[in-house]
Length: 277
Ligand code: 15L
Image (cartoon, rainbow, N blue to C red; front, side):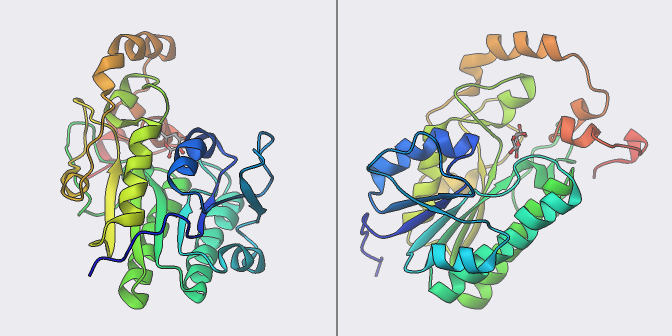
């Protein structure tokens, strides 16, 4: 039987003070009154109605205290771009492990993990990809997201946790450039995917793409659709803006070939013909 939905249950939301967290906080709060926001530092605009618990993901005791009594976790916290190894290691590798392990110990039932397109950033733009394929990270950051997906699979298979990995493209009010026409997701559509992860009765372990209904998409998101995802954002509605912004950026001989864009060209020393599958 499907588990009864209690929207008042404790749902821990990490990374609440970050860019994406700030965009979706009000949307989630309307749906889940039991939402507990977390980050290293309290957001400046915290409302009296919002609950906040500070936690450093690299500190296992703080993460354990945060998830105690939680039914579900939305794990957006961590380093959100390419960075030095130690920063990625502390926030996204150790931090992500601390979160999954604390969630297991606390008996958390569902975990939504914010993965990223950069776990598969070296796939060429001309290729349409699903989620059932080898990861091709384009950065240390992308590797950390692939690690988080792998942790999710292990905690699901070994401990029965329901885990949904959202391979997020780029979240915002509209696509920022031509690449983002293929990977953009509106805050509303992202929350729709999180809702599926928090409520769908059939999820054991799933990876879906965090993308709106983009005509230029490089991703086969049929699993998300099967789970009931009906995105309302359409990247093409913003094409004129995206093309104008792209003209200001100019060409990137490496990044323009691959889905991960500039993350691929960062520190790149290979022959471009030998990169990617
Ligand atoms: C991401 O994963 C990052 O968190 C975000 O800052 C963007 O760079 C995005 O990917 C993107 O690929 O546009």
